[in-house]
Amino acid sequence: MQTIAITGATGFAGSALIERLTAAGHRLKCLIRPKKGRELRDTAGIEWIAGDITRPDDLEALVAETDTVIHLAGLTRALGRDEFHATNVRSTAMLVSAARRAGVQDFILVSSLAATRPGVSPYAWSKALGETAAQALAGDMKLITLRPPAVLGPGDSATRDVMQLLKRGWLPCPGGPHGSLFSWIDVDDLARFILTMAILPHEEDRVTVSPCSGRSASWADVAEAGEEATGRKVRCIGLPRALVRGSGFCASLLSQFTRKPLILSIGKANELLQHEWQSDTLVDAPSPLHQTLSRCFLHLGGNGPK
Image (cartoon, rainbow, N blue to C red):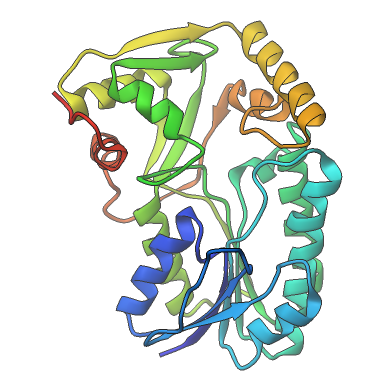
């Protein structure tokens, strides 16, 4: 069994991943940011390393005596390019360098499908630069870059509001119900795919892959899956492109005023309005969309689907 270092272990995807890794018998070292009221004790198979992704010494402690590093941590919302760069680029570069010096064999960088279009948003730009930095600094380590599309599953704060509306029979559709096509992946499918990539031998030193549970869905398909999950009619609310961009612009101004980044921004609006975001690799035994949505609805609590 391997010793695996993980960043982002307490996040949405990370929580699903460590459950699978511990079940498979691997020893884990997980970086956790000190936070008031947060106390995670070491358990069988998991060692928690208190530290911050931006501090080199903490990263050195994390990767010491490990076989594989899985880098999940990253910013999905920020006040601007500098904040995105500090975490998604600079910290990635520091972690890759620390892992190489520690003699780590395999490094798995969980990036984003957005990295394929760096000009769309500051987030996409930072993920692309993070990949470039990892490629330049990996040395003789095997580097596996994963570019997941939209990750869906219970407990995701980024999609909670949309899931609440969908459960009640309403679905906002940026650009209209058939305005774009996009891939998606169930959080458990992603965890299973990462586990597979971590334990399987790879002949190539550099691997880049974009896994998905569904390769091509529209908002209308999401509404149909929502109907199957709830047993009730889902009405699509078409949002004109100008309205989405205007809302993103206003949200970005509000974030600058309050100094608190929001999920919606002008960059996120641009991402939502792309005509397609499509992955290249379907995972084995992918979760059907209606089942993923059903799990999300159950996690929301309240009145169950009718």
